[in-house]
Amino acid sequence: MADAILNQPASRGLSLPGIKTSAVVMTLYLVFLLLPIYWLVNMSLKTNTEILNVFSLWPRDITFANYATILTDSSWYMGYINSLIYVVLNTVISISVALPAAYAFSRYSFLGDKHLFFWLLTNRMAPPAVFALPFFQFYSSVGLFDTHIAVALAHCLFNVPLAVWILEGFMRGVPKEIDETAYIDGYSFGRFFIRIFTPLIASGIGVAAFFCFMFSWVELLLSRTLTSVNAKPIAATMTRTVSASGLDWGVLAAAGVLTIVPGALVIYFVRNYIAKGFALGRV
Amino acid sequence: MEKTVNQKAWFLVLPVLALVAFSAVIPLMTVVNYSVQDTFGNNVFFWAGLEWFSNMLESDRMWAALGRQMVFSGIILAIEVPLGIFVALNMPKKGFWASVCLVLMALPLLIPWNVVGTIWQIFGRVDIGLLGHTLDRLGIDYNYTQDFFAAWATVIVMDVWHWTSLVALLAYAGLQSIPDAYYQAAKIDQASRWKVFRYIELPKMQGVLMIAILLRFMDSFMIYTEPFVVTGGGPGNSTTFLSIDLVKMALGQFDLGPAAAFSIMYFLVILLISWVFYTVMTNLDKREGK
Image 1: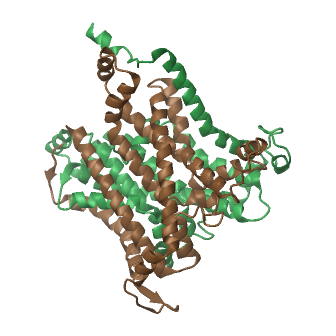
Image 2: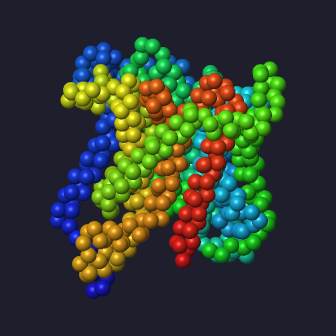
Image 3: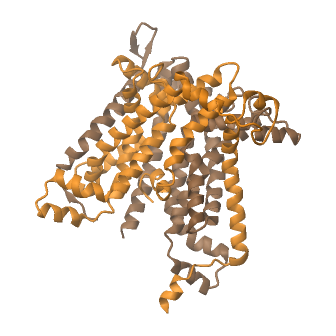
């Protein structure tokens, strides 16, 4: 009896009109979100003549020429490859150094732990604009300017703290008794960590990796400042096209659509963790 | 959870410490170094004391940029927070449509920032953009590269488009954690919709909302790429926010001293807000722990 009452969905004061209004609100909001993206996709499927001469809400004759241009011209597609290289490098570095640190923060208290945790946060919050010039000079002086590793290391500034905070949030959810039992059973720290603990927080690692990937992928200021030719990211390739005269709007739109693809591909799998990831593992 | 005291845990933190020190402390030291020195070129530097700081504090340019920044962040928060809460209240609670909403709402959050700029740059153009074209047809004079008001409106609507979902998703996470029993109690008491919101939902969302507000404030405070792509800081200097101004000064004009002094003051503000953020976070953790 009691269960049946408790399991009833909670209805809110305005149940009957409420359902309809909320559907309308959500539809309007989603249309607002999707319209600009639709417009970009729409433009990427048009020829430049159609873009500039006819104002059409959908492509009259769909062309994939813009995508073909990007996928066959090395100055374009190398941008994607460069971005992917430093983003993957950065994700691997960030996660591998963050894992042990997050474990330490979630399990032990040690001298200065709170200060250290706070200091990491300040780096996540630091404006990239402050670091652009010193990074440029630093990586130039050690001969790493215009390399993938320079961008990957620079992005560690905000991604390592992010990964530590997110992973710590997940690790706190794992009962400490598991660690203790494993140690009593004779597991060494390393074996315990890899064989037992890592599978337990696999989803946390996935979420942290996703957010490292994402924040490195969307960043432009540092990656543009630290590269010129060999490691030029797609974002910089795009801005240079914008500033050139005689814009190729179709290709620009197609390049934009292609940068959305990595996020859109995995978004479904992390949908329940998006708030958690943006809030640094706290929510 | 009770934590054991173990100083050896330092060894586990060491890689992070080394890496972040390498990518944060060393560059920051350079900034500090520049902020107290002057140069006539050729890498010859001499001590300038706090001159750059006092120069910057008297500079109209910095105060103007700071003013614009505060107005921008203020408007953003005033729109995004209520709108985000409103959207979260209207989201489906579970099932297929909840997933659809989550996925579609997260989409703008995952778009590279310069592409966000490009999307709105195209969308707002009178000749080829849907928004610009429609406004033009309606007889509204809209040109975000020339007109002060249009530039601000575009930058603000772009940010609302980009980040409101973050506030909504956080508020939604807060709402999800409210047990059904609370709503049932409210129903028995015949509480109005407003009272349910005011006395049940809002207090329960308080923690996540604080995080949302702080995150939005921080990120809007360091905004660079999106307005840079759309307006380039113009028309005139009307959308030149702190980061855009700083990059102009540091990388455009290579005024190292003033830029470094600027950076340090900028960073101190960030430090202060981070501290508030940290306090909120730890209080939230404690409350959940109980």
